Length: 304
Image (cartoon, rainbow, N blue to C red):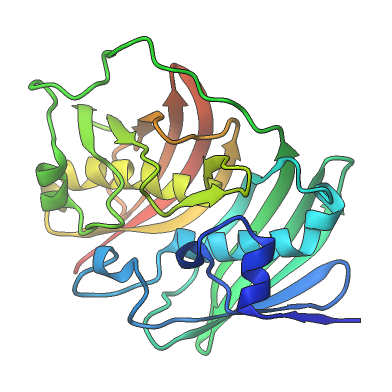
């Protein structure tokens, strides 16, 4: 028998603040499929940053909506006692087909396609009245909650006078603005390779916040953080100045370790030069010298 969840009921089942829940209504059709609704308003908190004069629902917000719908469908299978950290372990075959803008209604579906003893993989789709806007495969799992450690001190990636690009220079290249500009500075820019840094603070909205006080950065936003570093590479090329770099696809993403408030994300990404308007990027997100995510993605360069 199907079950309808109101927004209030969704908030009670997901460990997010109100502004990070991207589902207005959900129907749990059976034990394997869920359908969700997200109504898009001009008053969405992220539109001033994505983008100031041309509001578009970020692709990773669509993915996060899918992840939330998937969690509502499977949490009783994976973590019925709600003692662990239920998270997106992998993203595969993510394609952003068309934009969602203010006034659109997004219908989402998530359906289980395979299960193991400790993971569930779902196929998910988002669509508006014009057609499919996003497709993805998501694998969800559960991990133990971890305690943070204090850093030993400053390191080679901390901002310095020799850093080639601060946030003002970054903002001159890419259109993202607060609260959706995620790269704080670039520490190295060498042709097709960039090393950039994102400092993670608890004041940001994109956290899963559990009742016991545990907070962890949602996996879905991490490809966007790395993609912005990739866009900096592409738009630093004189031939591409004035263009826009659109996030087109995530071929594969693995989220290896949790990101906690206070972590310093070191973004390493390579985008080989191409004469095509499309570019592929491969990158890692590191914390304290260890990879916490690895992501393969695709961009498209377009005229504004």
